[in-house]
Length: 218
Ligand SMILES: [Zn+2]
Image (cartoon, rainbow, N blue to C red; front, side, top):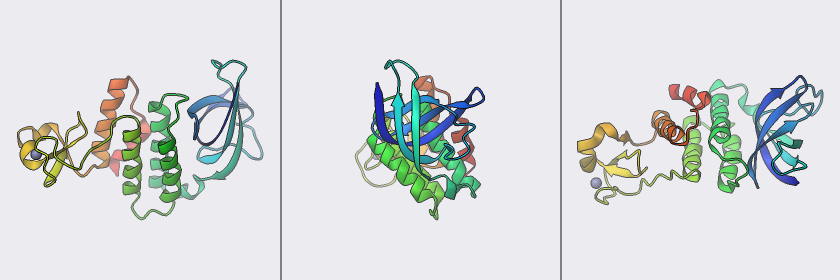
């Protein structure tokens, strides 16, 4: 059994003294976890979180953890390292993908959005907006598409200042009035995105990634 795809290395956890369990978000197969031999002690071509490259996954049986061969093409995290805010946002993106995506299911649009996010973040004058654009794509791809074009109650396209956390649809000021305390204010912020993801984690029995929680200060 062998799978090959471009990917982004999004997580590495030590396994013994030499190896790690790596998590790669691949273009063709989504999230794959496998052993990366010698990753911790590599002197040259050391695998690093934030690299994009070519992943090859091998296992004797489909159900096995398997082993990665990883050829990094470039390190997209390098330009973000000097800025704590940008780095924190990259870490949140990787943590959300690793926590909430099922393994080995293709998310092609989200993969493209994630590579775009890494490239854009290096020079973005408004990192929060760049992050929230990615997060909206992430929510859409995991089944929580926001529809903010018209009011879910009356259909108007004006005064859309609230969103229902249940349906992810916009609600106008007058329809929102009786329930305003139960709705999210628009536009979306780090805090409203967090509350939405917190609810999704609860529904899926997943743990809210601490890396996403940290972003609430921005
Ligand atoms: Zn309305």
